[in-house]
Amino acid sequence: MHLDHHHDGPSPVSADARRPDGSRRALRIGLGGPVGSGKTATVAALCRALRDELSLAVVTNDIYTREDAEFLLREAVLPPERITAVETGACPHTAIRDDISANLEAVEDLEDAIGPLDLVLVESGGDNLTATFSRGLVDAQIFVIDVAGGDDIPRKGGPGVTTADLLIVNKTDLAPYVGSDLARMAADAKAQRAELPVVFQSLRSEAGVTEVAAWVRAQLDAWAARA
Ligand SMILES: Nc1nc2c(ncn2[C@@H]2O[C@H](COP(=O)(O)OP(=O)(O)OP(=O)(O)O)[C@@H](O)[C@H]2O)c(=O)[nH]1
Ligand SMILES: [Mg+2]
Image (cartoon, rainbow, N blue to C red; front, side, top):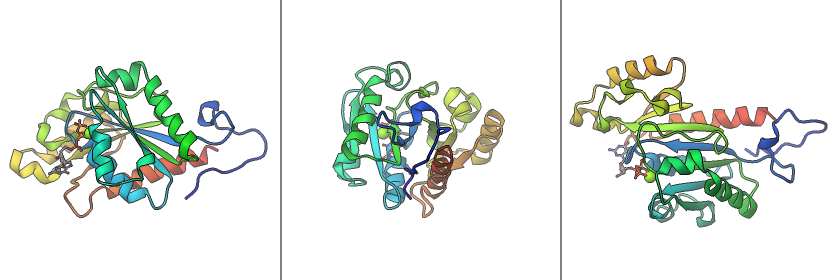
């Protein structure tokens, strides 16, 4: 799939959906959520699922290191030039919400170097339940929690759980070992999110990231339809 269509006449796409040279910019999807919930593992699985059909790149955010980028490089989920690390040096949410300049620059540098891109995944450093991305940085956001963090997390709410465009409840394979009640988590998530989608996944299972990859494809279709 290649998303860069050319049109005659005025485009309904807002100015910020275009690069300075008029070409379409990549759809940007942010992944946030508590430390260790499975953000990098989900990014890696998405890269493997989508890399043959899309031109994509990844920006990771770590507080003091490049650990997540190094994991993705080691796993060779994408060619190295498609993976960039931002060292936030402060609370992770600052770099994705308050001062997004380092992340915006990382995305733009990727597009300059290897564009045109269809998709850029931006992983936030692990944070608490209040961390969300600025809409100036990403077009859609995924919040990743896991069943081992406690089955009361969906009930506790917070902007990530409540407003993210997609909520992933990861590591369902661990539910029996940590005594998490998946039905209760589903009911609480539904109560917090109404019609917004929730995916329960285990990256240790055969299905893996399939459902989330389908959601990403739907976002890309909607993004393409805006042009
Ligand atoms: N059992 C199980 N383990 C998982 C699953 N997904 C991820 N993990 C493991 O959970 C650990 C943390 O995963 P990461 O992807 O590094 O988590 P993260 O959210 O990126 O962590 P930070 O970036 O440090 O906040 C790793 O050891 C993963 O292999 C899953 O579905 N099931
Ligand atoms: Mg990570």
